[in-house]
Length: 125
Length: 142
Figure 1 (tube, chains in turn blue, red):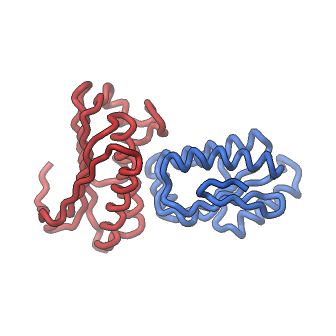
Figure 2 (tube, rainbow over the protein chains, first blue to last red):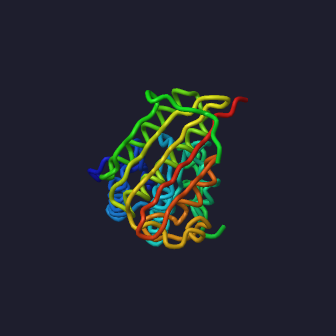
Figure 3 (cartoon, each protein chain N blue to C red):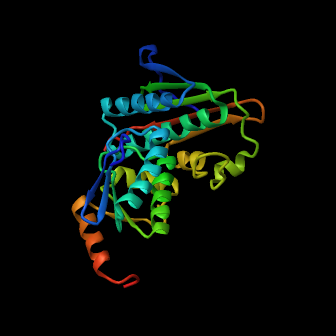
C-alpha cells in the first residue's frame, strides 16, 4: 500500500483513503498521485475519500479532491467523498465552489453502500 | 471603515510567511483563537479557510510576507487578520475580486471567496507595490 502520510486501504472492490491531517499542499499533491497509482495496482472500481476529520477545506484542497475524482473517473473508478462537515460544506458553497461532478455521502457507511449499489447497477441507471 | 473595537498588544500575533508550513501555522493560530473565543463552527471554518486562502496567496505570489492576527474587543468581539507582502501586487483587482481569475494554484476563488466568508474585507494593492489585505469577522451573539 502507498506509504504516504494518508492511509489508503482496500475494502473489497473499493479503495478507502482517510484524510486525518491538517494538510500541507505537498501532502495533498502526493496524495493525488498515490491514490491514482493505488487504483491501478489494486484494480479498484470505487474510491472513497473520507474527509470527516478535516475542519478546513480551502479552495486548493477542494480542487485537488475534485480533480482526483475526475482523474479516477477517467481511469474507470467512481469516487465518493464522505463525511464533509457542515461548516466545511457551508464554507465551500459561500466561496462559490460546489465540487461539480463529485459524488458525496454523509458517512463512510453510506459511501460504501453507494459504491456497492453502483457496482451492481449498470452504468447510467 | 471605522472600527470602534480596540486590541490589546497581548492579543496580537505576527507570523512571518516564508515557507509553506507557515500557512498552516497561521491557520492553526486562527483556529485556536476562534475556539478560545467560542466562535461557532461555521465562523471558525470561515476564518480558518480565509486564513488559508490569504496565506497561500502570499506564499504563491510573493514568496514571503507577514500575517498579523488580532483579537478585537469593544461592543463586539472580533478577529482581525492582516496579510501583507511586497510581491508583484494585483494587476486587475476588479477581475480578481470577481472570481474565476486564477493565476496560480487555486480555483481563482481565493479573493472573491474569502471576501464572502468575512464581514469586512479591505485590500490595498498596486502592480509592483505588493498587497495588503485586512479582514475582520465578528462573533455572533445569538
